[in-house]
Length: 157
Image (cartoon, rainbow, N blue to C red):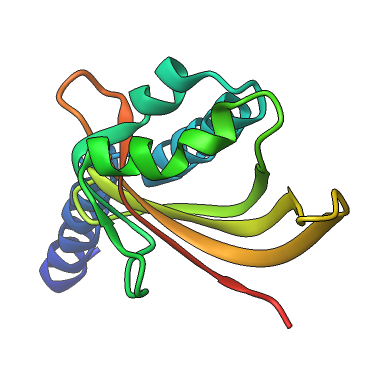
């Protein structure tokens, strides 16, 4: 092997080693995406169980729900007040199923998207149903948990 070939081979080897080192040094975004999907499932379960404390454990102090709508809510207390009926025995129900979760950048912010179903009784006692889609933005906390910082959705036709 001549000098030029040895230099080229060394450069390729150094580049390969640097590439491998870089792969191990960043956040595991796939695992983080799986973690927020798991959090979203547990978040939905808290509403299905009508468990206020568990529900609140997923919501950041500084949060926006219904973002971009006329009924936009700001702050954890405002969300709990507006969502209170979901936790009463005969109140409306909201269920959702995440279909995608992704974490970006430094691994501390991500989102989930999915399908939702809202059910409530009308004034005659008949159950009405509204289907939709949603997006929830999650922020990783210092303790490693994920909390909702933004949530919004839209109704399907």
